[in-house]
Amino acid sequence: MSIQWFPGHMNVTRKAIAERVPEIDVVIELLDARLPGSSANPLLAELTRGKPSLKVLNKQDLADAERTRLWLAHYQAQPGTNALALDASEPAPARRLIDASRVLAPLRGGMVKPMRVLICGIPNVGKSTLMNSMVGQRSAKTGDEPGITKVEQKILLASDFYLFDTPGMLWPRISVIEAGYHLAASGAIGRNAYDEEDVALELLARVRGPYRNRLEARYKLAGLKGLEALTDSELLELIGRKRGGLMPGGIVNRQKAAEIILHDFRSGAWGRITLETPDEYALWQAAGEQR
Ligand code: GDP
Picture 1 (cartoon, rainbow, N blue to C red):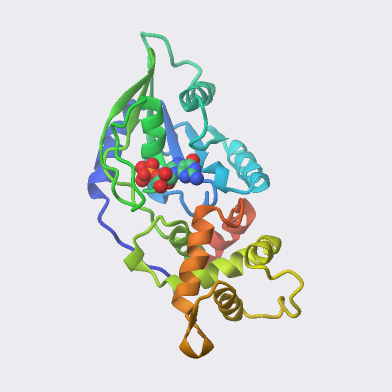
Picture 2 (spheres, rainbow, N blue to C red):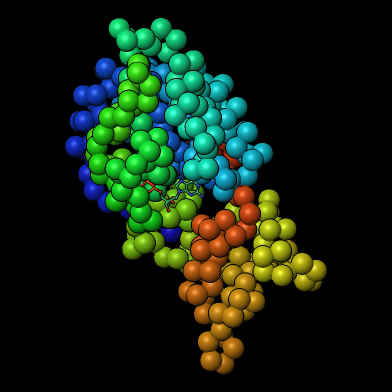
């Protein structure tokens, strides 16, 4: 089963971005560093084709540093593209965005030709948090539920550097089955659009290989015999059992176990984890195109 989510049409956003793009020098796309491929919006790529692009892997504090390096190299190898990793603890995010944008558009800058940059990202990627920290005041709303940010604004990051916020909502577009699960696991899509157990099972399937030791440490599974032979479903039950998700009669409350798993991933309790590598994502995309 795949996740279907159509939170709203993006016609208004599409039109507004298309209108703004001609006067923009660099497009910044904020991505979730735990799921860079899945958190990219293909519509944005389509609308901004040919424009210099700065990929910002945000929430890097939650992501696997080694995989973040792979993603940065992947983007930097693309023509007209630069990339950097960021998180909310960054003391001078504006400086880094300015420097990385200037590399992409060296002929822009100065009072005569100020740099104009458009910042975009799907909900929950941390755009309001970043904008707030750059504005230095709470002028944009932040929240845990995707879809809250709607304030449109223009920020003067330097005397010759304008940052425009995306006009409208850039909803995620689920073009790859795995991306749907990753977006759901990260909290980027509405809670009513998916079954938590399905998403938790998919998440376990993804992390139990590369991050097995994290699960073992978190749920005290180390040394358990036959752990590898467990199905994802049995692993979910084992975690539920370990974390007290039991119903009368000793039956595991699978819903509760799924909620614990999703909560632990989202909060970073498993440590720094990235759900996809550039190579994996490319394979999923290719498989999706054949379907
Ligand atoms: P927006 O919808 O893109 O504007 O996202 P928000 O700025 O509202 O952030 C969504 C959630 O992610 C909030 O709970 C933020 O506190 C959290 N968040 C934002 N940036 C970071 C970051 O760099 N690291 C971590 N760990 N959490 C972040």
